[in-house]
Structures are given as C-alpha cells and as structure tokens.
Length: 142
Image 1 (cartoon, rainbow, N blue to C red):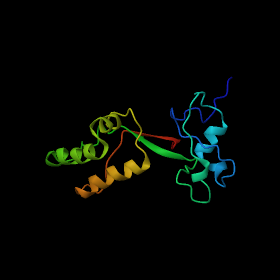
Image 2: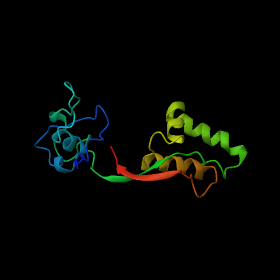
Image 3: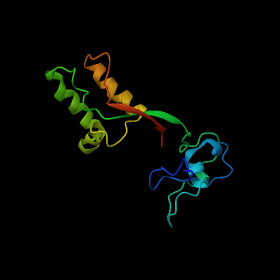
Image 4: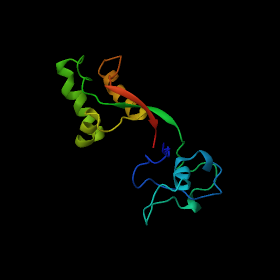
C-alpha cells in the first residue's frame, strides 16, 4: 500500500519558507511543507529569510489539527423570519457573496475563527446557542 504524505494536501501556491536558521522551523507549516518537497512548480512564493528572523515571525503557522465545520444549510432553521435577512446580510458583508455561499453549501470549510465570528453574529441577534453547522472534520489548519 502506498503511504500518503500528510502534507500533500497543502493548498496550491502555499507560501513556503526555506529559512533554516529559524527557531520555529520544526513546527511551522511553511517550513515543513517546503522541506517535504511537495511543490513541483518552477516558481514558488516564499518568505524572505531576512524579514522572518527572530522569535516573532509574522508568517509563523503552527502545524496543528483543528475542527473545521462544513455547511450551514440548516443554520437558519430555528431563526425567526424577521432576523434571517439581517443575519444573512451580516455574513455576506463579512465573507462576500460567493465566499458565503461556498461555506453555506459545504464546499469550503469554516475555520474555528470563522465559526467564532458566525456564532458572534447569531448571539448578537439573541440566539444564545449560536449557529449550527452541518458537520465537522478534524483537519490541518493551513
């Protein structure tokens, strides 16, 4: 059986880092993906090593698994009709029309930060339980 590289699902054009002197290199996804030699493009985007030195790299991305939500098709089932348009409008303004609908339809995952934002909108309108999502998957947060 062929073993799958766990980092091969990195998004296309993922920012790479080749700074071998970085103290956080062993736990940074940008460095790990670069070292895994997954990207076979002739030209890649990478972090300039001269701007990513020290303890606080602006581009550091921890290699961690998070709970990604998918789909919001039943999110408004328990929402009053008078609130639906306003809540949906707030979400569309935040994500953009197309981005909102790919998340709503489950085509794109909803990160924990995005879930928190969506829940905050529902709570602001008086729905203490927040939003409901169709399902969840534990995935690497790129």
